[in-house]
Structure formats: structure tokens, C-alpha cells
Image (cartoon, rainbow, N blue to C red; front, side, top):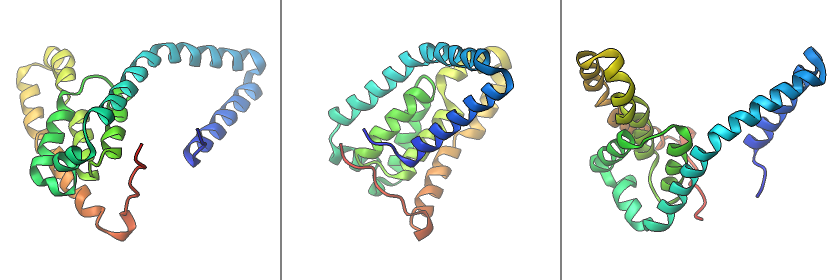
Length: 177
């Protein structure tokens, strides 16, 4: 395991937050913050473990060539549509979807397909639509919002594919595992 710049930034933010708590209320406030963080960890850990397991299994079950063919640069609109569909049916929060995205990135999916996946997951998520939106907002609202959002993952994927061709947005490929 190695520390990345992102890890260091979050570590600095955590230390700064702890120092601010100590300055505001001393050790009791720091302890209360740590207890709250531990409680949140217990809630999040099963979801995170499931997401990491899904990501790891995907990276081992699907060959790099197959992922590249289905979701790589040459997959065209079919790849964006497949990624959008997969994002829409992926249950859970970011603890499940982002490990899947990482596994697909490492396995050869391109940025356009992954952005289509994430956009679809965020905007269309079928499980949230059924559990939350339909009961709270009604069928008419849900239908209108869903129809408006349907083309957005494809558009986001196309825009991402165009942007990553520009030198300023050139992405480094994730290292193969």
C-alpha cells in the first residue's frame, strides 16, 4: 500500500479537523467526533466491503479484451448505452458503484463509458426510482423526470470522449492489477 496525494490531502484535512475540535472543545469534543466517525464506519463498512468485492470479482471474471470490446473507446454508442443501462440498474450508493467503475477502468473501459455509467447511476437509478421517487412524487412526475434524464448519460459519455482527446484532459490509464 502506498499513500497517494489524495490520501495525504484527506489525512491533512482530518488532522486539521481534529485540531479544530480540540481547540473548540478539547478532548471531549475530539472523542465525540471520533465516536461518531466510528459509528458511521460501522454503517458504511458492509456496503464498502460489498462494493470492493463486486469490483474485485468483475476484474477477475471479465477479461480485459471483453471489457475493452464492450466499453472501450471503440465500443461506440453501443458501449455508452450498455454502460448507461448498467448504471441505471446498479443498486446502492457510491460504496458499490465506484469500486465497480474502478474495476472496469482497470479492465479497459474508457472514460466515456464510465461517465455514462456514473451519470445513469446518479440520475436514473431504478432502485431509487422505485423505492423513493414513485411513492413520494407519483407516477407522472417520475415518468417526466426519467424521460428527461434518459439521454443525459449518453450525452455525458459522448462529451467525455470528446474531452479526453484534448491534451489538457488526457487521462492516465489505471494500472492493470
